[in-house]
Each structure stands twice: as C-alpha cells, then as structure tokens.
Image (cartoon, rainbow, N blue to C red; front, side, top):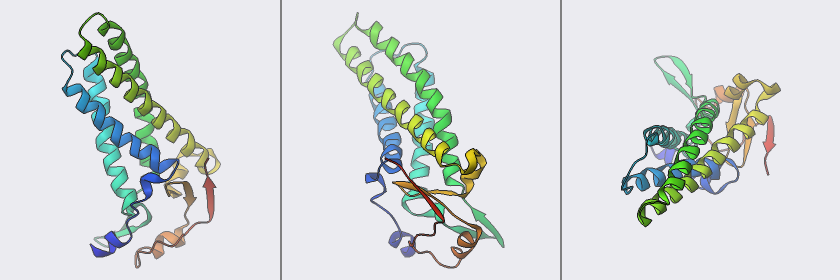
Length: 198
C-alpha cells in the first residue's frame, strides 16, 4: 500500500488535456446529479440523462483512480497469470458512449430549459445549470475521443491497449516495459513514442 501511495500522481488533474478533461467528467457529472436532486419537476426523458450521468460518474471515478495511482502502468500477477488493465482503451470506449449519450442529454435538458421559462425561477435555474454542465461533459467526452483516436497506432482502436495516458500526453509502451513492471513499481518514463497535445 505504501508503494502505491508513493507512486501516486496527484497532479494528474492539473495536466492538460487528459488530466483536466477526465477530472471534468467526474466533477461535472457529480454536479449535474446533485442539481437534479433540487429540480422541482423532472421532464420526460430526464431519466435517460440521469442514467448517462451516473454511468459517466462511476466509470470516470474508476478511470481516475487507475490513473492517479498508476495501475495503468503495471502488470499484476494473479494465480500465475499476468493481468494488464487496458485503461486507455476503456477510457476511449466510455468516452465514446458517453459522448453520444451526453449529446442527446444536452438536447433533452436544453428543451427542458426552454420549456421551464414558463414556470418558476427555481426550475429555470436548475435546467440552465444542467444545460451548461451537460454541454461541458459533451465537450470533454468528445475531446478525449478525438485525442485518443489520434494517438491510436496506425489509426487502429485496438492499438490503444499499448497506449498509456500520462495526463498531458500519451505514451506507447512495449512488451518488455510491461513485463518489467511486474517486479518493480517506478515512476520512470517507459516510452518509445510520445504524443503531446496542445
């Protein structure tokens, strides 16, 4: 446990683009779910929005834990078998699903916001906040999908299994590097190619 704490990268969420965007996924999905609690009235279709927000919140918390504590760079030996977490591929797939889901959700809450203009001030504020947070989440998920697609070796999505997210860049790992992490957990860079993003 001490080794995990030593290798933890708590500056991950301050690094652009991946650290910030993945932090946005957790923060704004949590804010949106809290705001829904204060809504005096839920429009039809908001159950879909709540489902997508909950899915994104749970997945992003898991992804962020994996990246902050460096589990995405390690190979675990379980019952004599090597287990590697394809964290980058999981982040891509989750963001791709939630990109579409949050796009639809943004339209749903935007329609709710327009309709809420006929009602109480509290309802207007709730749906205005939800429209903004859902739009931010749509942007964050879309940006992550675009960046990871660009980082995929030869444009092959399955190649993301060999790509590691470092917060401000992606790095490609090799089989030799992955094997060496079974015996030691260091924070040294084990990259062959690096892609920097602005």
